[in-house]
Length: 221
Ligand code: TZP
Ligand code: MG
Image (cartoon, rainbow, N blue to C red):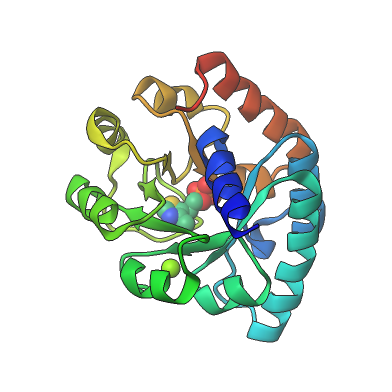
């Protein structure tokens, strides 16, 4: 069963193009309706990203999203918190450069959980591969109000990653249905998106549109 889970989570990750970062405060109609809508449209990976939510509330929230993602055959990743990923039996954790080091998180989570790492330049991407991360975030691509940055990695960083990184990787930062084609043209086959889905009037429609754009481009490899 452990091996099955391991294979399953990595298979879903390999086959997935669209990654949703779910944040309550960005959601037009609340995060529950947004994520259920997106899952119904075919989303296969969700990250709960709540920087301010008290721990107990976060656990209850994550347990609900865990049920919905399980029902949809989708992965659940928790931002920043390996402890909560374990508590709710999420599929993994997403870490930033200043969070738990990947090696330490791996000791806590074991081989069967996924660990993602945000990277902002090619040296960090290479280091992420060496650290044993399962996938990387690549950004920020465009300007965004979801997170404050001083520097943009832009489309050039996507091109660098496309040329040499073989782990699954997700461009992130200000990506939406209007600019996704630029990201795909730069060599990406996947993307991580928050505001454009959570904040949409109709998250189902936007998710469907984004998934169609990926499908037209090529399948993730
Ligand atoms: N890391 C890099 S950009 C970003 C994070 C968490 C925010 C992504 O959100 P949006 O709304 O898709 O720009
Ligand atoms: Mg973090």
